[in-house]
Image (cartoon, rainbow, N blue to C red; front, side, top):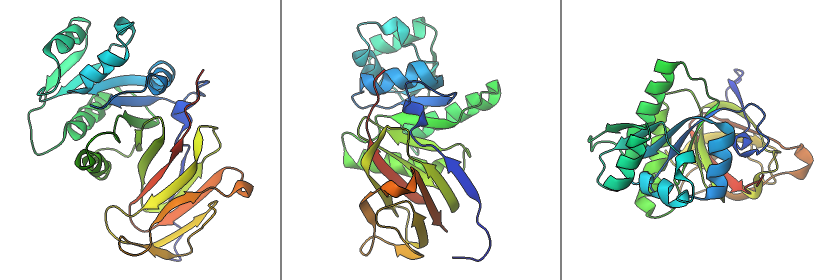
Length: 257
């Protein structure tokens, strides 16, 4: 690694799932996959100050909350609307949701929604700690990879961490430099991983893991750090130092209030 002191970023990735919420604010994006009401309930009621839904996510949100849909009205709905039920879309529109058609086929509904979420935050001076997307991992593998690609696209849109989350796992992109991760909220699962999705990461150093890296290269076809876990003597602190963007992922145990 370079002898120059790296930029240090300090994050608590699962703070948004703490049912006691200690002042964490998020922008929430609901994607087109079946939704866990346990996850949604914590994020929607405890942390989200801006709530957005993409296209078919309209149906997923309505299905998950059909017993009390009036308590789950999003601020923003976006997409080309080839998947959203017209009845569900009209229901939310009548309840005050802002509905914006985004027909551009060069970007996914997730990316287009993220662009508008960032725009609305800037227009309304909404401050958040994280942008959290739910429904990013289920279903088709190509769509999962597209959602991970959105994490890379997000780097040109915002400096706010963008997290992919469901009830069993989460992922976000570590920026070049040094990241200090607080992983003692109680919502973390046993496993974690560092995955060089965007290309080779030639210099990676970690602390706080059972199997740490010491200025090692992560590369598909060679070494990748999946199925790692936490060093129990590290007091819930992990550091990752990398010269290139690197995907961090870990298990999730949803805390129910």
